[in-house]
Length: 160
Image (tube, rainbow, N blue to C red; front, side, top):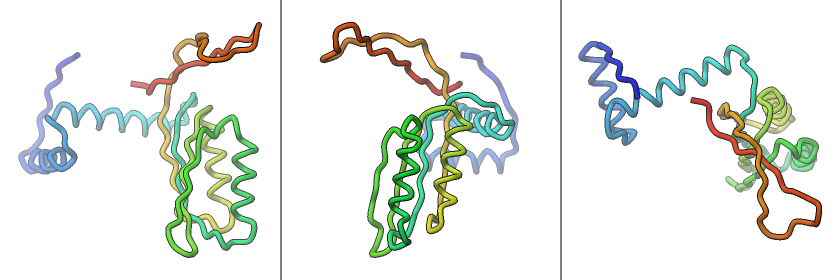
């Protein structure tokens, strides 16, 4: 770990200390590390650096909107390689919240999120994207694997 020193005025330091106390950080260093990671992630996203990501797409929609639920489901099935899981919650008589966990190429995930939130009747869409790197693929032999078949997959880890 590398040590750095920064100087900030007293008012900003007091605001920062209040923020980190409210967020539950144990010290300033943990909070600064998270801020730097967030800033770097935002810079990567804004500069169009492509790669792979994991993401959460959340949106609210009116389930009375004509065929909207079917259109949203069709979009997810059309990109089944990106869609990991979906959670659906009923907010009230008219509105539902869906949260879709996504994984794949950042450009493809963004395009999918744009298509979902552009559907008529979808409101309040928000994509939270985290860039990740692939660690090497490897084989797992858990449970039944047909003769001659190997289950190979990769693990993802957030970029630092």
